[in-house]
Length: 93
Image (cartoon, rainbow, N blue to C red):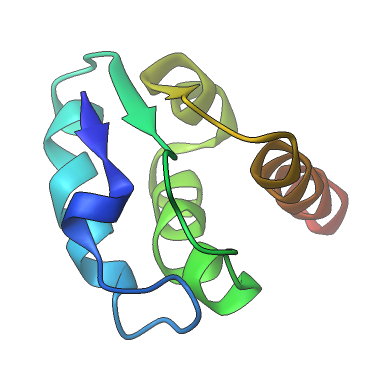
């Protein structure tokens, strides 16, 4: 399991996003599932999502993203932000 809060210092800007991208990348390359914990995470900005999770979706596709990432310990608020973000990607694709 990867705890986002242990990888990044904040989720407000895309300055921290690369750390998360790098931590998750091997799971995408190896087609492995990974639990991603959102416990104690600050609110996520779209900038942060664009350059971390969004970059993985762009590189590997939405289906592989859904097959790789299993959100755990996620609040309703974070789940809604993530869901809206993914829907916005689907609309713009």
